[in-house]
Image (cartoon, rainbow, N blue to C red; front, top):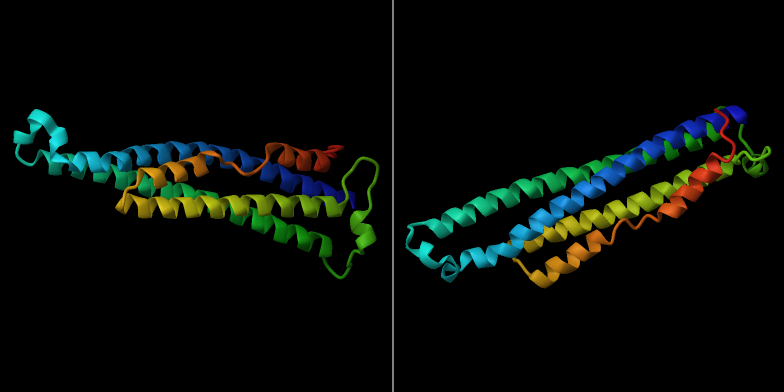
Length: 198
């Protein structure tokens, strides 16, 4: 059992690396979303000729400014899409860890009983604690990924028909993230590393 616990702790170290990456992606997504929101918020004003003052006389200035803003928005939206794909790759990595972990305890012809899965040796976590911890982390991150993906899809729709009210609501929804309670994640790590074997 101690050997399997060591393998689980290695998996949780990998999970911790993925969580650090997740936080970096969260910061990047918020910055990208702010930039896209700013451009979307300006589109109606840019399209109104009366906002150009003395530049109204410059032939094609409105179209040139609008085209530049649309090009910038397209670049940012592609970056946002890539960031969301990176979030998804972390979720897929967590799914693989959960699958591998289940196979680890079911390994070979030796099936472990519920009692064996819940057995503790001193401060060390049970195999059940490890499995449950990984499953909870996967569920939290998958739920947040789905929410982020929905927010980004809604942003793409708003980009076509700008609405400052809708844009503000989406921005607030995204900026209220993450929905992953840090103290809960830390609690899971504390259980798994209650007595670090390595």
